[in-house]
Length: 123
Length: 123
Image: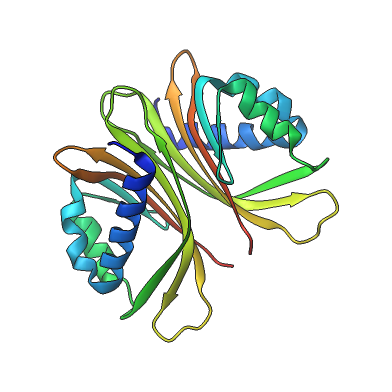
């Protein structure tokens, strides 16, 4: 993966800018084996995950990333673990919500999201 | 790992109750290969991780867990990924801080923490 900090920054920047522009374009980042837990709801596979994301009841969304931490995952797997914290502003709301999101990215002709856990913290 | 939700709950309960009673007793949960990123500071190995935790400048601490999410990690590794969110109250402070913590637990004669990422969200 080369420099995992650079990989993590690039991925996080790409993920949220794509999310904020057009959630349906996140599909190539997931595969059939991908898992997402969104506020406690478990989803599996690119199709179900992106359907969930596109069904969220807001029109406009902006993620502002506060922190990105990254570590290599276990030996023998070409994967990294990223934890993001940040703020989320939807539609005409003026008070941002805090969020935290975990990604385990696997390298395989580029990389894809294997594990994804998302939580809002109602600050 | 059997029922990973039960494993995660038991681990989380044990981890924070041990942390709040006596941080130095967390050593058996980490090994030399364990990684921790604590508020952006990278640490490796049980000794350095627990030294960091025991050096944190508070006498009393109470973790209150709000959410626990768990997923199996990659195929071929006997590991689970846990994300915790919650509140942290230290010493005489009356306003809790929000925290989020990631653990990757590996099963190997019991289990140990391979990845650990901790962040406070200043709510």
